[in-house]
Image 1 (cartoon, one colour):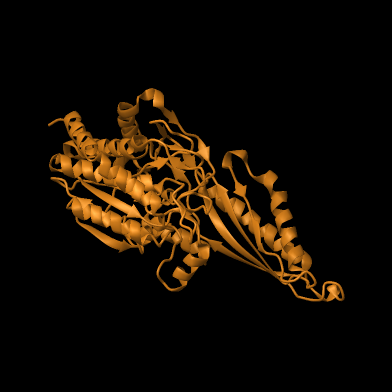
Image 2: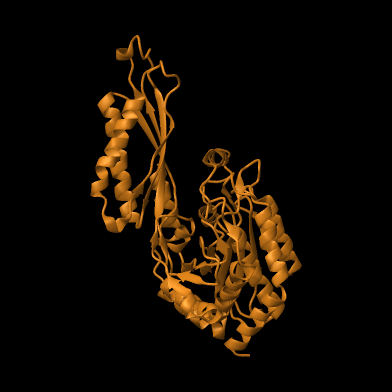
Amino acid sequence: MNIAELKQKVCQAIDDHRDSIIEIGEQIFRHPELGYKETKTAALVSQTLTQLGIPHRTGLAVTGVKGRLKGRNSNLTVSVMGELDAVVSFEHPHADRTTGAAHCCGHNAQIAAMLGVGYGLVKSGVMEQLDGDVVLFAVPAEEYVELDYRRRLQADGIIKFFGGKQELIRLGEFDDIDMSMMCHIESDTPQNSFIIGAEAAGFIGKSIRYIGKEAHAGGAPHQGINALNAALLGLMGIHAQRETFRDDDHIRVHPIITRGGDLVNIVPADVRLETYVRGRTIEAIMDASAKVNNALKAGALAIGAEVEIKEMPGYLPMVNDPNLEAVFAANARQLVGAENIRRGGFTAVSGDNGDLMQLMPSIIPGHGGVSGQAHSRHFAIADFDAAYITPAKAMAMTVIDLLADGAKQGLEVKSNFKPRFTKESYLAFWEDLLS
């Protein structure tokens, strides 16, 4: 059977199980869960893999689920991923009323499409003619939310990284994978379409505490050290640095004050801020981060306060591998037509897929199927096929291209990729930041 016939079989199998795939996506949409808490969603993934006869492991990085489909030979391993977690949006009509969790970033579609690939590969029987393995990987905690909760998990030794893929890298769960892909739904794009070639920023998080000296704000302010004034000078110092950020680096620094003092008649002695430093490249992020730290320290020095700056590993920049992307794009054109594919530009949002992209060939094309802006109350599935079925077909067809004929095309993609980090140097990079 040739490659075209294998693709036809896998797409037919996905169509045959369309209702089941859609129901998975809709069930997850109705029951959103936040990162490292996705127990119900993970259980649904495990149940589906069991029904498909796919051996799998659960509880990886708290809630991750990893299944493996074996080919007739194991020359290469391709991972198809989906993210388990939701974001916080209390105003969304399908939000969890207790946690605020809502699937207004489309991760429900990712899981449905990933399992759709599983349906296609298993029910068509094509794995018997492929020379590589496929890992179906449901990964936790992509959204960078509930940081206090994740700090508690860190303190208890349950996790080290806030991001699920980062934690899975640390645990060695990507050591047996050669390349990865997943799709991400795009805001305000109801039509059946794809976006390829987009880039996204990386970032470092910072937690800042200014320590002053309390005193009566009316009666004896001269006896105090105003930590709020130190913080404001630190923020002004950041603003003064903005002209030094190169336009091409797309630096974004957006701090907030999370604690400004205790009482209005007490000189503020404990003031806290949080910020991200985002950028297009690792080098630009590190340069801007150092400038931000200098500005924050200068604010403390000017007032005579102290400042504590705690760095938090964020996510690395996202750059799709062009060779893997070319294989995917050819299949996408077959499904939606060249007129419904556009190239994406740079966006200052971030995701932990960027970390994986520094280690192995990875892609995360965008696709249609929703109305409304992501992370808003208006986000809703507008087209079931565009949201759940078409991306499943595109990824399954790409798997066939990569693993057919001795996995020749997949091995070429792997050999042409030049990683920025090894796993060891990647972990050392973040460890240096934290030390």
